[in-house]
Image (cartoon, rainbow, N blue to C red; front, side, top):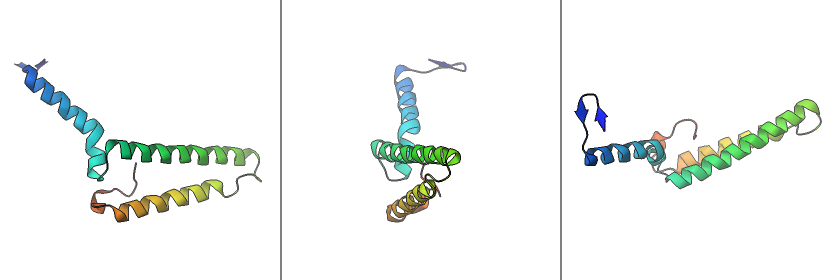
Length: 100
């Protein structure tokens, strides 16, 4: 592989790729004290709940009597869940104010 005017050896190229893979997939979860899979499952769960809250809002916009408190309650529950996880983490100082 050529970078600028310098050729990378096969070994250097493999290290570069593995460093890129580590940075893209594992660095962020590791800073939170999580595995890639654990972080992914948590992010998917939050995403599904957010989609559900969004759908409830869309229905509520059309028929105001439906889902009057659903989205607000779901978001409050998710916030409380994230706050508890951050407080119980081995390194809460590395957690941002939001989890995703």
